[in-house]
Image (cartoon, rainbow, N blue to C red; front, side, top):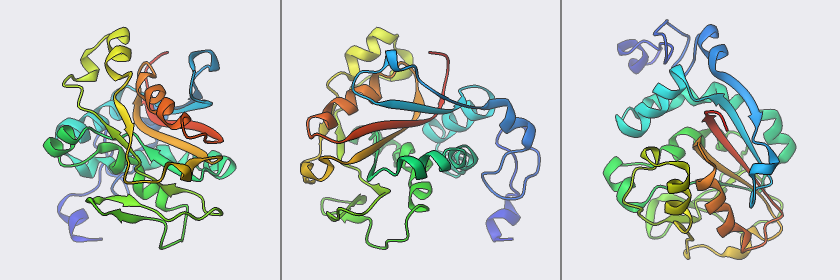
Amino acid sequence: MNLFDFLFPPVCPHCGAHVKQQGDWCDSCIEAVLNIRQVPSKLLSSLDSVWILADYIGGIKSMIYDVKFNEKKEQSKGAAPFLASYNLRMHAYKPHYVIPIPSSSEKKKSRGYNQVDLFFYNWVLSFTNHEHDTFKDKQNSNRPILEDCEDKYFQWFDCLYKLDTHKEMWSLSGSERRNTIEDAFLWNNNFDSSLIRDKRILLVDDIYTTGATLESAARVLRRYSPQTIEALTIASGSF
């Protein structure tokens, strides 16, 4: 047992029951929210498919909220068992690049991190043993950059830039979200856009609400002719 676990014994993020390690859930709590499903294709435009891993209720809702708004970064480990449920699909789809939905620079400065990175980054790295899969963006040491290598997969590629919308998305209606986020993403010109041509892309985000955020990001990526764009989110309500 490490010092952190000794001082803060690992507990289920929802009910507080003792568990084996940080990020684990008790069986009953994970079963209450785990709900792997796809968004109906009729709701998609620029995306080929969208996978959801859990219902946005109970413990999963509390976990995501704490990471995003209460600076409880350690809680992000609670996403691990849900992401593990996507492992078989991850191996089958075998994306060349995994692209996180970015936070605006203002949001990231205020929060100190992008919660999507916390939820997904280590999980994505677990699929590859290539030490040179990620590099640092010359203008931002916290952003990975990568080399062009045609036969590599599961590469974390933080290639999008998000403009500051000056609005909290959770407070907006569906139509307001779509209008606000429609042109919020840009390609980060520190990266070569030809890297994603004819490649399989996995877009990742924490929550699927109306799909406006993922669709807006996917529209930017479509300009550079990827082969497919699939998306994965941890949780969603009804759609």
